[in-house]
Amino acid sequence: MAVAPARDDKLHLADVERRLKAIFIGSVGNLVEWYDFYTYAAFALYFAGAFFPSHDPVVQQLNAAILFALGFIVRPVGGWLFGHLADKYGRRNALMLSVLLMCFGSLMIAATPTYATIGVAAPVLLGLARVIQGLSLGGEYGTSATYLTEVADEKHRGFYSSFQYVTLIGGQLCALLVLLILQQMFFTGDELRAWGWRVPFVIGALLALIALVMRRNLHETEEFEAANGKSKAKRSAKTR
Image (cartoon, rainbow, N blue to C red):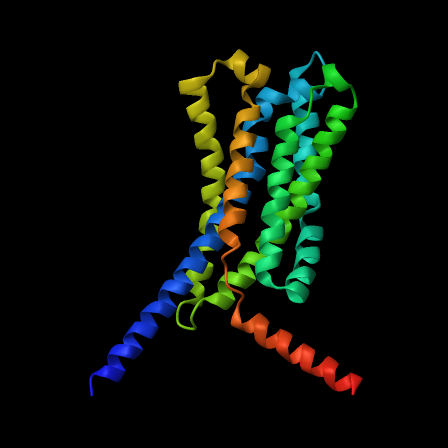
C-alpha cells in the first residue's frame, strides 16, 4: 500500500528538480546579459578615447554615454520583437536567440579596431554593437519573465519570478566587480586604456556562450505547448 505514495513523492521531487533547473538556467542567462550590457558603462572611462577622437575627456565620455543610451532606446523594440518570436517559436528558442545576440554584441565591442586604425567606422561599429545588445536585453527581459512565470508551480510563481530582478542587479554588480579586480590585480590604468578594457567583453561573450549551451537543454513551458497545440488545431480545422 505504500508503493503509490512513494512513487508520487518521486514524481513530485523530479518535477521540483526540473523546475529548479529551468529557473536556474533562465536566471543565469539573465545575469550574464545584464553583465554584458553594463560592462560598457563600467569600462567606458577606459575605452572612450579609443573610439572618439578628442583632446577633451569630457567630450569622449559624453559620446560614449550617447551610445550607452542608444542601448536603452532600442530595448522596447527588442522586447516587442522577441515577445512575438517567443509566442510563435517558443520561449526556449527566443531565450537562446537573445543570449546569442548578446554574445555577438560583446564580441563586436571586444574586437572592433580603434578610431586611429579604421577612422569613423570604429564608433559606427560600436554603436551597432550597442544596438544589438539593446535588442538582446529587451528581448531577454520580457521573455525570461514569461518563462520564469510559466515554468514555476502555482504556489511559487512570485518567488521564482523575483529571480529576474535579483539577477538584473547581480549582473550590474558583477560588471563592477570585474572592473575592481582588473584594476587592482591585473592591469595598470595605462594598460586598461590601451587594451585591457577588451578583456571584460571577451569574458562576457564567453559567459553568454556558456549560457547558450545551457539553454539548449531547457524544456519548453507547458503553457506555450498548450497554446501552440490549440493554434495548430484551429489552423487544421480551417483548412478542412
